[in-house]
Every structure is written in C-alpha cells, then in structure tokens.
Length: 109
Image (cartoon, rainbow, N blue to C red; front, side):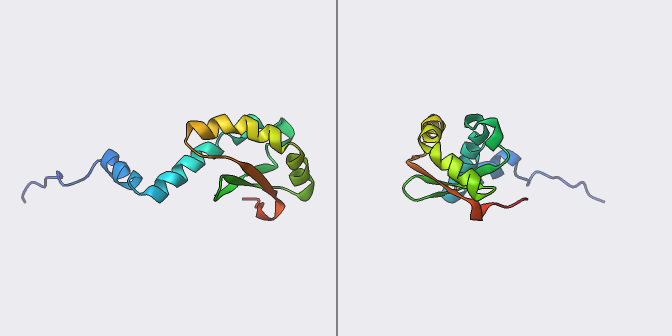
C-alpha cells in the first residue's frame, strides 16, 4: 500500500482568516466581543437580569431584560450606562448612541 501524504489540508489560521473576510461575520464577532463588556458596567443586581440582544441601525443597542421592572430601572440609568459603555464601543469602532431595554427579548437559555 502506498504512503498517504496529507499536505492538502488548510491550517486553522487560514480558515479563520478566510472567514473573517466576510464583513457580516466580522461585524457579528465584533459585536459579540463588545457585548462581553456588558457585565463590567452594570451594578451587580442587574448582571443576571439583563444582557445585550442586538444593535439597530444608528447605533442603538437593544438590551433584553428579565422583566419590565428591570427594563424601567435600566432606562432610568441609561445616560450613565451609555457613558460607561461608550469607551468600549469606540475601541471596537462601533457607534453607540442609545439603548433600548426590552423585556420581550428575554429568554432563559
């Protein structure tokens, strides 16, 4: 039996590089990295009751909240949250102009 050479395989780095050429995937990865900073700006009592859900055009971040009470409390703190979160967004070249807090987007998963 002949010797099998496995020289046609692409390395993981090459595959990831080619995937990151897709602008939509690159945007999704950047947003996910931004969302990871959410817990660092929140008071402890809200960390398990809210999480970033999506970004709308114009730099509006939609935040899923466990219930309407949490959404209202975070709405009252919106200016403070935006000012704390903006440096993280700017470092990733994402414009953040507003936040919307939506209990309908909450899932337990």
